[in-house]
Image 1 (cartoon, rainbow, N blue to C red):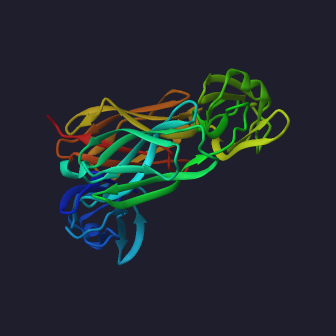
Image 2: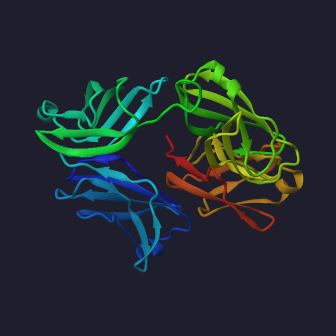
Image 3: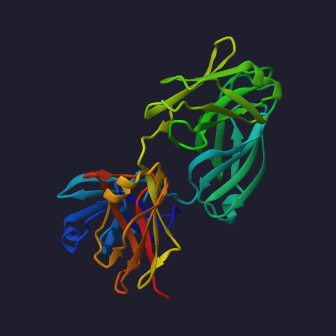
Length: 386
């Protein structure tokens, strides 16, 4: 189901722990599966069962391992069944893995960047970041050894539109170049504004909700709002309302009708004259009644203790709550009767026996004979007894 690591960035010659979550893990299954890194000179050892939903192992990064991202995968009978969506990174000393922006100025003409590398004190004296185009200034280089270098970038007024980038040198040799990370474009809103993205404040909604979306941009001014319009591609959500927040952000609001059908929806921002400025598909979703978002245990539960398990969602009916089931792979975890607290919350007491191992446990949710896979997950963590 997922894979996570004790360390996200490591040098060659490192051993660290990692975990795989899933369901129905047994001692027989533990013997059946294989895990491989898919990366030369990176191997996995000491796999062992922690809980019916968690297997722990050690990632061994050899001294010869090359710089790169590592995506472990699980095999059963030598056939791959799962590949980790999130990697960890191995970086050799004196090499560079990647460079990316961490934030941008409101006018879009500068920002902060981060380099993932592997340096010591001596190598910092030879570290250089050079722009591909004159007129782009690099400043405020700060080292957080061994893996992180932060810096500032400023785009001068004479830099032409087009793709530009950075080259990184260590010890007099170019180690990394990324052209295209800086893209200078002409404004499409007013004199200086340019839309770069759309982000929904909440991904999931019910019909009748107010849908709020943040328009990410640079160089905006308050008067630009009057020149903009927007529409939802798949269904008419009515008139769009824009609110100016800052030179880098607007708030776009729709009031969804009660008859809005469930489904995925995209949004297009345009000028009042109809010129398309930015479009994003699958920006938010309308969900049906009795929709489950995820589970929550508050306060955290310990081995030998009890707590409250909450199932969170939207518009739960009494009939749905009565038919809702939660199954657990670990027999030492038991649940009391589930009750509907309000239209968005079901709750039950959760008990954990003293012999239950600390770790991750996956709750299997279903209703009316149908499996439910909530978008925010149903894995809980049992903590060690004090």
